[in-house]
Length: 222
Length: 192
Image (cartoon, rainbow over all chains, first blue to last red):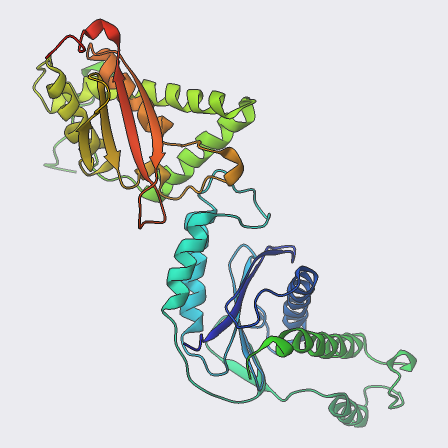
């Protein structure tokens, strides 16, 4: 009965974890780890909006790695629902939208639920279990895809430290100012403000990405 | 516009006909309103018993008006004098108008003569509500119990009405029972 979904997380608009359910074989993650993962994802999501080459980006919708996929859905109110699933699992967007519906029904209409607090609603758990049971599997590859509101998508190659410095060499040849390629980014001089933001954001996302993968990967059934 | 009829304008709301009105109300709208009712009352009380009482009182006000309206609309202003009559009125007509379906069952209590039970798999008002464990046996169905009490009281059958969760084997969620205990002055015990 390989569950296609490994785990489900719901984070409130300030990035705090309000719901975490694990469907994998290793049981529940340590609470601190799950909180860390949630805030990592929250910040990465926010950074990606800045990093996107297209205007009006609403954040990461899909993260594809070798051993897992991470699908994220952000509601209009900023609440994020994301699942870690087996690579290539189909139909996760619909599942996330369905879970959002369950959230609006059984959590928001519950008079005993305080906004932005951890979710402890029996009806939500029951209906969620039914919704997740209905999902199944398939297979795929490796890229980060940042999608904007419309249906276009741009593919960015997975950015490594080496590649950033390659790009910077290109930039330097286009008269962006004088600077020296140096692995210690703190020593950049005379660079454009937006470029520095780009670099900072890229590095932050790479670091966070590595941390995120370190948190998720050991717990997957390989 | 030429030829368009003009609706008769009523200046006094009491002169307006008691039409059927719109049959459908948004479930989400009602759910949010009811949720706010419960939350508001929670801020006003110190304990759970008080909260149940307040919800019941809110329901009582609804019950009084529902009885008047339905007697006029559905029953042609006939008054129920028999116990079974009023109970089946509550069980079918009132439930149908308020919740869109008749209640699941109407049973007579086995221990006492004057006890009756209306049960429902899940009350409409409780559909989206999960009561936290630390509130014990609190049931938002107290609102519905209040409605029933309002109807019975004003029809001349005073009773104490309460809502209870009854666990059922094989089902995760308990069923809800509205327990009606008629007052002594109705002399039901003396019947054979």
